[in-house]
Image (spheres, rainbow, N blue to C red):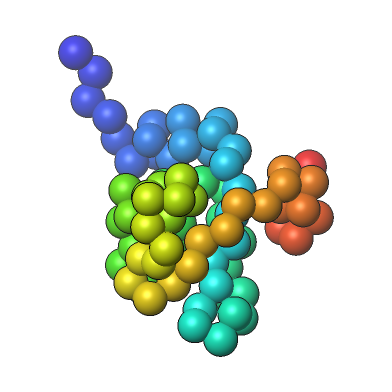
Length: 83
């Protein structure tokens, strides 16, 4: 059985592209993320990937007071400069 390292988890996570933006209560963009796992690792607000996915799938309106909205892959690549 293989023990997953943080690097291995991050490498697999980078393959999944489900981009979204995070908005605060004033509709200001807080961040643009590749997927819920990246957002969970890189933000300072303590989001959980399950809470993010619940918002993106319409089961919840907010998570910790923030809104999450799906964006197109093209918009994500344009905003982050990824190829």
